[in-house]
Image (cartoon, rainbow, N blue to C red; front, side, top):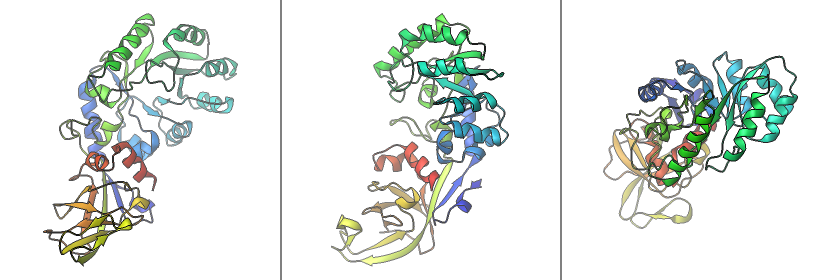
Amino acid sequence: MADQQSKSLRAAKISIDLCALQHNFLQVKKISANNKIMPVIKANAYGHGLLQVADALSDADGFAVAQLAEALALREHGITKPVTVFQGFTQAQQLDLIFQHNLCPAVSQQWQIDLLEKNTSAASIDIWLKINTGMGRLGFQPADVGAAYQQLQNNPAINQIGLMTHFANADEPAHASNASQLEQFSKLSATYKNAKTSVSNSAAILTRLLPNQSWLRPGIMLYGSSPFTDKSAAELQLKPVMSLRAELIAINELKKGQTVGYGNDWTCPQDMPVGIVNIGYGDGYPRHAVGAPLMINTQRVKLIGRVSMDSIAIDLRGIDCCCGDEVECWGQQISVDEVASSAQTIAYELLCNVGKV
């Protein structure tokens, strides 16, 4: 178990279970067959710590990040495996660093291909050609892939070209766009038989979309969160990696009709004990969480009132506890997905926000 609390002056405690991370990676391997796996460790590994996660996933075939700075941090740390940079490069200086450190950029714009032709490095690299099959974010339109691929193939600085796309609705397996995107990508990949391919994020891996691709890109499932609204992480055999805990610092005996927190949003329905926990949105806890569950002494409690910067209030009716007891905000007993749902957001945001504090 790795503990990140030593880096923070805040009272909330973040702990990272690297054994759970490795367990989740093994779930990917069970599905992967002959596919290679590049764990997605962008955004500080979804708030879990870029370098410690890379070290813990040493059995991976490579890694994927969003930004060049993240890739350079991995190289400086001694990671020598292939590192894909989803956002590629935006200027010649960045491209020089990509060649220097043997990184694998995703190329999604014509000007990037033109810039590759102007590079004078004696080294060579692999690249991913990003295709927009329906996400509408980054990538070449399918009709433009042929010319882009040919231009890259004629560049002696390019070793191997990969074809990559991203599902817009993989978390909804029955969504019609999945079949459309698969059809477009399958036609293109059949045309370029020597190209490596990568399509599947966590949701696509778990639903076995395009199983014959070269590289899988697991992200959120590695961290023990479900990409689906109708299936829990536990049902998917995933274990929570991050635990967020704080301390019960006060127990107030309030009277019926008294209110709790900013805006007087919550009114006590009877005389009752209200607990105050030293965590808030200043620690990355979601400000818009409404009625979120927490756990204290193996007893489930509920958040009441608004989330403050440094504290939250909890309903302690019928709960056996005292000041100083530890409260789990999410982790082993409370799913981060459930907390995210109460805040009308997704676990990705919660994990990333807490990891920034």
